[in-house]
Image (cartoon, rainbow, N blue to C red):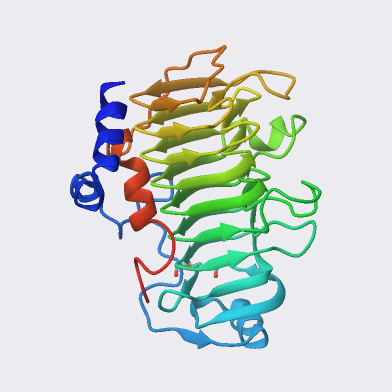
Length: 317
Ligand SMILES: *[C@@H]1O[C@H](CO)[C@@H](O)[C@H](O)[C@H]1NC(C)=O
């Protein structure tokens, strides 16, 4: 409560006060941390730059380093193979009316891209049966909380035994179904012991639910900002375990919940979070914490840091 109050006062004091939380950022913006550690994608070469959907589709079949320059429209679903990096050039590159599918792949990096409005019924990024995937500094959105919630699927989903994933510095916004980890209560055989995901320094704003939803898996969520999650925030279910720390929730219903919409509950461990008009419902308290090294920023700074340093144009290629 003290932190929240002092932060609100700092905000009210105007732009000079806003700089204060940013100065306290300890985490590096250009660093792979967490479960996807060791992912190298297409390596460090210059790679191929593409400016059309046809060129992107062709390059994706070969893999390596692929740079997208500009906003490409209507590419459909681009299949991403192992040992690939897909990187946005500058501060305004991405895809619209398109999405990525990472399937039966390992060692994939996708960074600095603005993706909006997947093809109907599809995810913007869909990760299936894949390992070592780092999604970083992205802007992921559709048209907002309007129309049928099932018109589009998820912004960033991971399913079918995928594992060792890091989703960092991403702006998830204006969408119904955010990030689904584990797609079905009936998929224990494939998912149990898999689906380890690190989420850090993300902004979830005006996304209805699944922030994320985790079945069977393990999610570490830290130094993130949640604003206006209408239905539910972090949903731990079917024996999943989550550890949520140094995260700020504002106007987010069921900011952390462990017994929503599944046959069995999950567990949640939580530490140093701020909840403003954001109730939790933790029916099963967990003890999970990760064993890797990482640097947190305080919950009171999480929103200012995510607004300033998540999304596109921060790390550039
Ligand atoms: C990915 O790269 C590694 C290291 O060079 C190589 O051993 C592996 O075969 C590659 N995988 C695929 C599917 O190309």
